[in-house]
Amino acid sequence: MRIVVDLNRCQAYAQCVFLAHETFRLAGEEALTYEPNPDDARRLQVQRAAAACPVRAIVLDHQDGAERGVTS
Image 1 (cartoon, one colour):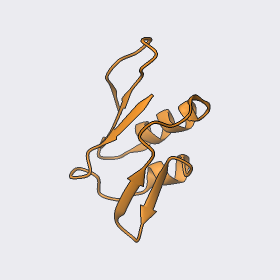
Image 2 (cartoon, rainbow, N blue to C red; image 1 turned 135 degrees about the vertical axis):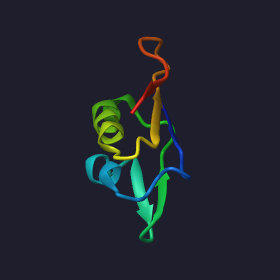
Image 3 (cartoon, one colour; image 1 turned 120 degrees about the horizontal axis):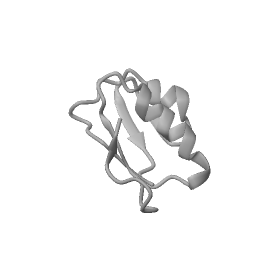
């Protein structure tokens, strides 16, 4: 799985950090950092975090061929 976050769209609501703190982090109060290629063990957490983003700034690319270009 590959994660891409549109940092221009991100408003630092931090729902992703709350749901997948091993993958998404806030640096300071507003700067989001993230692991672009998390382990498959974190897949469900990352999918839930992407779905919870109120501005839909997180895009997931499932590299296993099952799903491609799922946006959340």
